[in-house]
Amino acid sequence: MFAFFNKDDPADQTEIQLDPNRIPAHTAIIMDGNGRWAKSRHLPRIAGHKEGMNTVKKITIAASDLGVKVLTLYAFSTENWKRPTDEVNYLMQLPVSFFDTFVPDLVKNNVRVQVMGYIDRLPVATQKAVQDAIADTQQCDGMVLNFALNYGSRAEIVTGVQQIAKRVRDGELDVADIDDATIDAALMTAPLAPYNDPDLLIRTSGEERISNFLMWQIAYSELVFTDVKWPDFTATTLQACIADFQSRDRRFGGLSDHK
Image 1 (cartoon, rainbow, N blue to C red):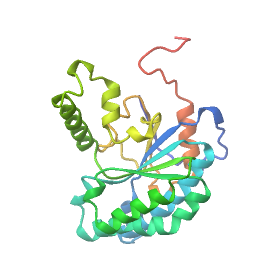
Image 2 (image 1 turned 90 degrees about the vertical axis):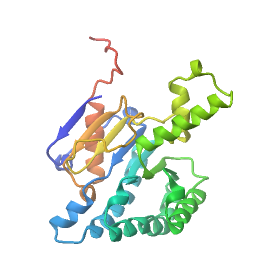
Image 3 (image 1 turned 120 degrees about the vertical axis):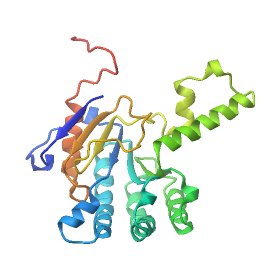
Image 4 (image 1 turned 180 degrees about the horizontal axis):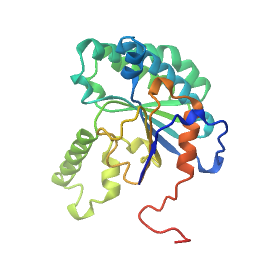
């Protein structure tokens, strides 16, 4: 794993060549910069979140068209509840309006919705929007659009450890038999198998940290950090990030054949 610090908008590149056989099967994105995008335009932060949802729609279709198998988007973290109440309330309403308008396009593009996180702790209307979108797209067998909603990696790991401990206590599992696969199966990405772990993790808006996102799963992911704020992220930006991914020599702790 190593980071690519991209200080220019890759969308400024005129032509991007991608190898269709090396598209990252699972691409995850920390969608950052909505508030700063709005502030730079003298708009309220919620205007940035609204525009960010439009970007989600565009990038979902772009990723599906490129052949991505799973697109995981970090939509709301377990720490985001600390934000101002008005902003949190708006963020909780976004999935309702988002799925209300976008589910027909998802079905048309054969995209299936999945959501991971502590969904039962969300407002009832948000839970219903999520559950309806999952149900309405369950017959789609193309790309999985996986939202991390009220998700935090540390909480996920704690919950997974508790589940494993309960299995040991109940005599279903021997301590000596606990391995990587046991932990994989206890995490919220288990339904994404065989694409549990992202090949590529992108973070927008110039921040260079993981922010409690998929910490187990990104052990060997390629990381791309771009200054582009999420509302400005385009299909071309995504292609440029994937081009960076394709330029990497992924060794998974070993050596390349020519080393």
